[in-house]
Every structure is written in C-alpha cells, then in structure tokens.
Image (cartoon, rainbow, N blue to C red; front, side, top):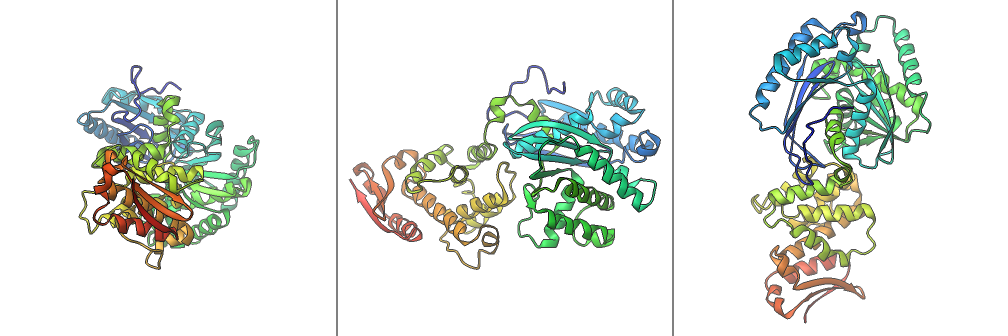
Length: 501
C-alpha cells in the first residue's frame, strides 16, 4: 500500500494535525476530518452523501451514471470546504464499486481532473486491512475476525493479539445483494456458499467477531432498541450469537415501516438492512463466534492508523484521549497523574485493566469544572458516556462516569443509579463510588495543586484510613477535609484518622 499522507509528515505523540479523508464507497461518499491527538483522533467534521455509485454494478459491471454525477458533486463540495479547514493532508480512497467497474479508472481520472484529488483505489485485501486497522485503533490487542460489510463487498481480516493476518474479500455487499436476480432460495444458497468460501482459509476458531460498516451499525442500533439496553453507544456494543440471531430474524420478519419505528436511520439504509441480517446469520452459522462486537471505527480510521509509526500505535488510546481532555479542559493540566500516584497506596493489588481506569478517572477528574457546581456531577456522567473514547468497553465507560459523578457529589449505591447498576452490578458500582470519593479528597485537600498534594499522603494501616499532613501543610486540614476523609473511610468500611507530623 502506498496511500501516504505526505512523505515528510511527522507524527507527534499528542497531535497529528488535521487530516481529511474522502471515502468513495459503493453507496455513499463521506468526508471525515480528524483533529487533535494522534492515538485517539477526534472528529472535526463528518458528512455523508448517499450517491449509489455502485447501484447496478453487479449486472452491468459499470458505475451507476446518476451515482457518478452525485459522487462528483459531493467530492467537489468536500474538496472546496476543506480548503478553509487548514488541513495537513487530504486523502481520497475508493473501494469495491470503483475497483470492480470497468469504467472505474475513467471515474478516478475525472475526479482528478475536476477536483485535483488523487483517488487511491484500494484492493479488496487492502480494504480488509484498513478496516482491521480501524478496529485496532479502538481495540489495540484485539483477537478475532473483522467483518466489514459495504455496498458492493464484504471484507474479512483475521486479528491475533493486535496483528493483522489473513485478509480476503467477497461480493457480499448489501447493495449488490439487494439487486440479486433469483429466488429467495437461490439468494440464500449464494450467500451460504460465498461465506463458506470466504472463511475457508481461516486456521483458528473465531471467538470474537468484530462487525464494521454502516449496515452493521444500524443493526446494532436496532438491537439496542429491541433489548432496551440503557446505553446508546454503538462502539464496543457487544452481544452473543443467540441475541444476534434473534435480531436478524426479527429484521427479516418486519418491513421498512416497522423498522423505522425502532431505529432512526434513512429509508435507503433500512432497505439494505435485511441483506446485512442474512449475511450475519451465515457468518454466525459458519464461524460460531462466542462474542460479537460492533466497531464505530473502520476503513477511514484504519487509514489513519496505518500511517502511524509503531511508537504511536503502542500508546494506550484511552489514556491518550484522557490526557488530551485534561490538557484542553482541566484547570491544572498534569495534576491528574499526581492525583493517581497519590491515591494508589489505598488501592492495592489493582488488576491491569483497573489501573488504566483509575488513571483515566484521575486525568478526567477536573475536566467539567466550568459547569455550574449543581450540574458538574451529571455533566461528568453525560460527557464520559457520550464522548469519543477508544480502548474502553461499556462497563469501563460506566465505571469512569460513576467515579466522576462521585468525585463531585455524595453518592451511594441505590435504585436511583439505574443505568450503572444494570451494567456494572452493585459491587463494581461501589468501587467506582469509592474511587470518586478518593479523588474528591485529594482534590479538596490540595486545592488541585500538585505542590500541596506533596504535603500530605494517604494510606491504610490496621483497617484504619490515615490522612497524614506535614507540618508545612497543617493548614490544609481546615474546613471540610475531615468530612471528605470520613466519607471515603465509610465507603471502605474503615475507621479514619487525620494526622499532622
């Protein structure tokens, strides 16, 4: 692959500049502009135009004429508006519709002539690899099979501990399947045979199936609606095969009108959803996966990930995202790491995953300070449950949100915590609340000053929680510090003691 942003482009740890990617797909043309921090980029701009470029290509092997004109207009618009966005680079990539059509080359030439944009036409295996890299942007050490369904093709990529292995492509795109000429039985036979052939060279059983693509995202939205799942986040939404099959069969037994009452999506997308359901049913039959996850990251994010040097790829996406939030929003950037080190003595034997969550919480602990004090807790919860974070599952996201709520107000496990309790369970929710109380104590006693934090330490001895202040910091103990210490001790079922030495 030689799809490079620029030969002289230098990636920095915390910022990659602003990069635009125009993705010319079979069903739509989309512009995404990434902005901000390298390992977990934020979305500066995101716009999609449904063009239907690949409509009819299965029979005619030719790009749809109306779709070509719509795509050209969309690309012209995107190139024009990006000129005022101060981009570091603008990348154009085309996928199955353009690479398979006999007039795809002429379309690429026309785009270049009319917009000065050079479209890179990805092969099927390259498209699979880009999609897999997109998954790795959010799941750094993922193992399993990535399946990316588009309008004209379905790509798979095998992942083992974050390494992309076998990649393959097939004509099982939802737009192409919707134009299949033949009976229902023939369609099922075609999908069955294509999935079996596509997966025939996989060497290991598939435990985790990662689903990528717009139709699969709509599938996830529908499943969330049907199951009354309390968190409306698609990325890392997971379910088992039985639940996925129930939803797939529900789709096949309901028309577009009924689908539209359950999920907010365009009619064009909903019309293609039954084909995505049929493909997923066969993937489950052939692969027998234990877990199914939906990824909001795909080809476009994978192109960005592909450009990153190893030293950037190896960074933790969650921690990098939280560091960026702290730098841009906290009163005293850098205090979060100091707070994390300060609270660690009372949280011994944390698992590796919990160490990440506790550090992330400390980095975010002061990022909503601009909100009115009466609403900081609720805003913290809403921000964490809705913001763009990679490298964290739904349970981890709710744990962070609840810890940050507890950092700003007194909380106990109760029925009022409906969403956290449903996703975390009571014991885990209590751990998050205790973490929040510890952060609140550290922030309160120090005034979020790293210098003041050095004047005290917290530790546990013989089931007693101690806050020990140096003589130089004895005045820090005034006010409500002891109340915060008591609240933390109560949550840990311990006595407490305030010492000055």
